[in-house]
Image 1: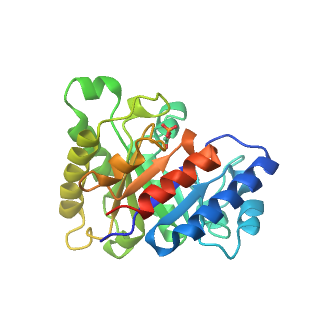
Image 2 (image 1 turned 120 degrees about the vertical axis):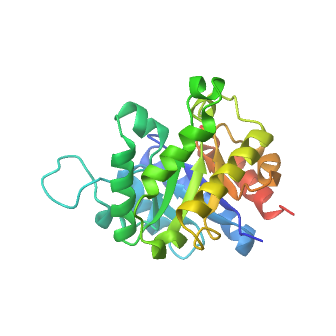
Length: 253
Ligand code: PGA
C-alpha cells in the first residue's frame, strides 16, 4: 500500500519562536509514526532555514509554499527553486491562494513546476475548482485542464517527485470540507488523467485531499478510495490536532 503523506501548509502564520516550537512538536509526532507515514511542513520563507536546523535528524520534511517562475537574477522579492533546494525537500505550486491573490495562470504554475523539478525538489501540485465551477458541474473539467497544463511536456523521469493535491477552493479555510465521496470521485478522475498524461509513470504519484481537513475528519478522508494523504492548512498550526492527523494516517488500514 502507498505510504500516506500528511503535509502542513502554515501559510503566512507563526512567529519564529512559534515556528520552532511547532516544528519540533510535529517532528516528534512524525518520528512516533515511523515509516507508516511521511510528514512535511511548509513554513514561511524566512523560517525555512532555522526550522530545518531545529528538526535536523528527524523524519519531518521541510517544504516551501511556492517558488519563483524564474532562475536567479534581478527579481526583487522572489525566491528561486535552486535557493529553496538548499533547505527544502519539496515545494507547493499552484495553491489557489497564489492563483487568486497573485493572478497565477496555469502557464505560470507549469513554469514553477518545471523550475522546482529541475532544481531537484519534489512538487505538490495543487488543483481544484471554485464554488461556482463546482455548482455548475465543471469540477472534473477544471481539474483536468489544470493538470494537463501544469504537466504538459514533462520529463516522465520526474514523475516520481510529483504529488497532486486536490483542494476545492470553496473548502479551503471555510470549515466546509468536501465529502469523502467527492474526494474519492475526484481522486479517481485525477488518477485517470495522470495515467493518460504520464503513461506508465503515474502509479507512484500520490493524490492528497485538502480543504478544511482536521483531526475530526482526517480518518474518513484517509479511508476514501484513492486518497493517499492530506494537505492541511489551519489544523497544521495546532500541534495536537496535526499530531492526531498524523496518527490517523499511521493507523490507516
Ligand atoms: P485549510 O487549508 O486546511 O485551512 O482549509 C488547506 C490549504 O490551503 O492547503
